[in-house]
Length: 411
Image (cartoon, rainbow, N blue to C red):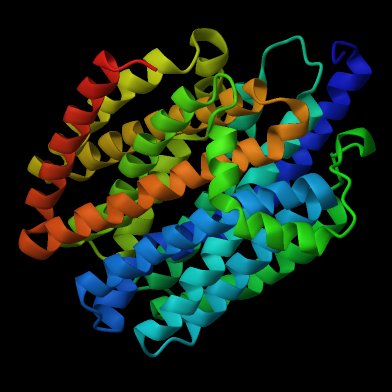
């Protein structure tokens, strides 16, 4: 039982270590994500349809790898998969740094997809491992604390972008590709430090023992849809998974395309970085409390309320061109996203059996990828036919409809 001072301190140390790793992971992911669409559209002159296709491919790949790699973490441990994930992000930055066509971005998409498939299920499984026996009901809060460390990475990413992309810095502004080069170096250093700092959390009794781990991984890839169906049928998980599908649909569509909306409002790349910087500063101290929402109220009601408030916030963002309004609205949307993701991660981790935690969180990732893949297709099609303002307004309308469906449809 984790109720003694010594055990609580041990859990805190484990959370701190994975939080440290998450600083570098989010630094890299934030940098890739924030400027990916702008970089391809403006620097590489890529059509919006191809950009949407690349983002969709990123999520399709994860459909096939989330479950096998999460199941693999139950065999070899959480640490190897976490380090693999952050290393893939770093390689993704490298290919963007040297890109001269969208084909390089395709390679980045593949690395990021594999990285996310390895990293996130292993991180949330690690948190489940260290919280086993915890009587304080604070798994959601622990998720929030790890996200809080990720905010430090987001602050670093936004601060570096704000400084180096601004036109009046002491050294002169650099290109987005050059920024990717700098972040590649920082990411590589972070991977080395993470390897030595992070400790394995999976105990021997909870490891999945197989005759040949590589054959097991191959069989898991081949049987991904069978495992997906079987895990979805585990008691209590399907309602969580369906909500996660819609959460991911909302989150990925908004995060991928709101920088394009800001460009429509004549923001510079450095101005977008400033907005993200201030947004992160507003939320960084709140992350554990936002994660605690699930511990106090469960996941269903806060998540469904979040659907409607997010839709309203997106509409406001598309009709008001004011920095302070943008700052508050985007901060609110990111806060809601934090509640959503910590709720789903904590609920999945606590609902799944201990020996199925890895694959359960991997299956959650498949639903995430399905939602994100549909999101990029929907907004990509909308953005191809309409201006980004109207496309996001229509997107908000879809969110409203989805919210009402979840109110009246209960599993």
